[in-house]
Amino acid sequence: MKKVTWNDVLTFNRGLKTEDRDLLVKREWKATHRIPNADGRSYFHIDCPFCKTRNTVYVWSFAGQGKRCEVCGAMFSWFGEAYQFKSNNKRKDLQ
Ligand SMILES: [Zn+2]
Image 1 (cartoon, rainbow, N blue to C red):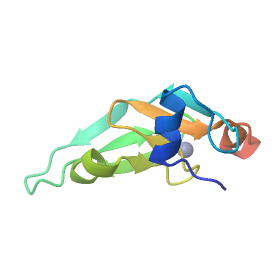
Image 2: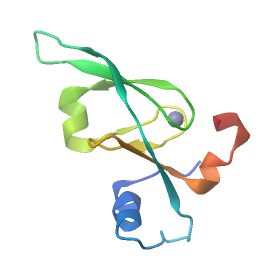
Image 3: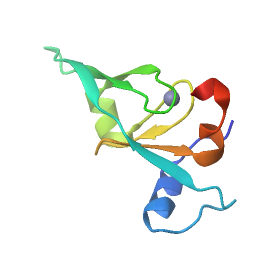
């Protein structure tokens, strides 16, 4: 399955269509269960707004490069937005 890249997200946010004219869908995610850790490896969970999978996200990693859903490949941004291709979002097994 095609996975969302930052380039796709930037293109989408400029109001342009992606290469193959497959527009993204944007939804909000909410972090749950933030777990602070003494060694700086704090993590939290993002429940994917597309496929409902609970993703574990390390803060140090997420701040630099964002995070993809482990199951459907949706991209989570630092600002609480999640992006998925419209065509992936139509798949019944991801809803
Ligand atoms: Zn997902």
